[in-house]
Image (tube, rainbow, N blue to C red; front, top):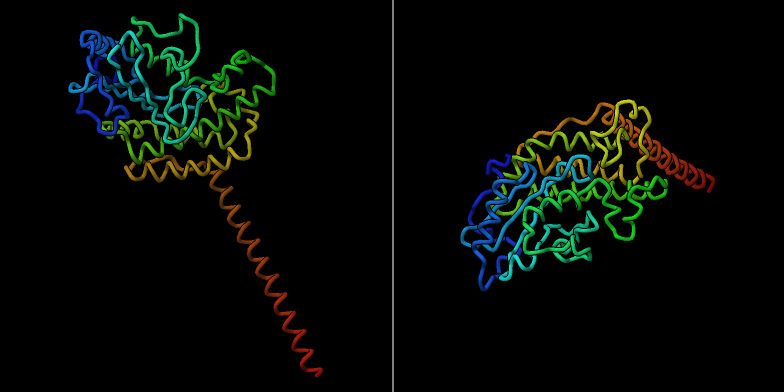
Length: 317
């Protein structure tokens, strides 16, 4: 889908839209229709928008997580409401968080913190004006919010974005790991319950991207590349393993299984686990069985000895 209009569509009003009960007393139809034309002719392939002809003050957008970030291959949904005074005031935006905060700018409550819509501080040039557009807003979310180093989106850490200091780099890497897990957890929920009117879109997206997403999980688990650097690492740098946190490895195993289950409900196949990982799991299973066997033998031996002692005591009597 590209800027030929295929990623811009008119559908029936979504009853699960966050702003369905908000109404504008009056709308600037001419300005809104201008927004529609801008979106229809300029949306990038990775952003898709649905509008409602019976409610021109509402929109729903989905942004595909950019490659080279912890959000790659994910889908991020936003509900948009255009108030009566639009475009003199910014649109209201709600993010479908599913209860997770996977980015400093995206709250569990659905709040999007961004200077452009006046929900965060910023310079006059960064603030909304009556010449700002919905397209500008969506591109800003994709490029400025869903970036490769979201840890530094926090204003207090922003000046350190290009630091080489190992402590801050490590903190950023750990944040990326957590952001990726939360992104995958969100995807699992979206696959199970897509936003209204996007059901087919969600299934088709994951038919195309499930394999790369699962392969990324496996590569992260093997320590072959750091989160947020997939596709950016040169072959020569793969000789040394990436150090991952212990919790991240556990979470990767868990989320792989959850995604596999969610995808299976739509008959979407995923790649088999790498041979090394499968062998490792079998070894762990054999090790556990062996340990359990030794424990059982030890317990049975103790019981047998107690019986022997008791039997000897009875005989002496």
